[in-house]
Length: 349
Image 1: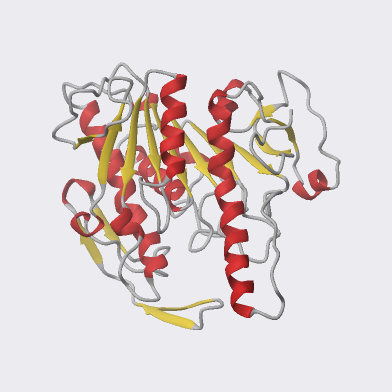
Image 2: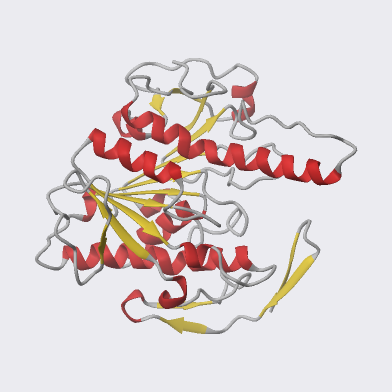
């Protein structure tokens, strides 16, 4: 039995391990360690996830697809991109539409927006985030099952051509997608983790959180995982390449100003400040897709050194990296530092 308190919310919950739920082809999910600090994931019908396909054939009108029906516009010959949102959001958010448009401008892809908004905002007072964090296990399995089914059917998908892009809890969902496929001897091509969620994941073993094991290539942007008072992201390295723009904490342009005599305004401004830095990860990635600016990043084993100005150079063609979409264009691996502008366009180099 685990007793867990959520800091700052004066809320404690007791979790008893040893239970299991099974959801057909998605598999079984238990709450044994290391999953004993959260509830079991909800069922697919409760999470109510949906796969919304966009291609150059239907760039502005979604086509709902399922494992049984890939739709009219899906083509296995194209690369397939998943975009997965995080906590308290949905595919209706404008940043997802922006990313979808940039991807289809870049290439003739299958772009799948995975909506799991019911599971990302469960109606459980006080415990909705832990439940949403647990639900990522089922959502990741569902995305993997979709591609696994297409691979083994007449559709003929190559899993190596599948790229999962996720923000916050969506990044952790991509990790579970990769784990589900790996358990079936398949290797997801790429995961781009955009400020992967930290609460309920930071410090956990690889079986719980996104790691470089979950795809052939994993690139991660940390925009709210270090040094801030409130952290929504994870600061620990989680991929083959980990980018720490502006140190990976509070991002420039996400200022914190408030009236010290108004506690309510203070709390609202702190929330907005943290959310702004957390959101910069998907803004940077979206900008990087078609920008002529490379988001060139410098190797930096100690990110504090980067903030002190000691990670200010790299060797083109070897140790440099390019944050975001173009990170596969460089052989560099490890941790990387770069500075950005306060406003879009953010790329400085």
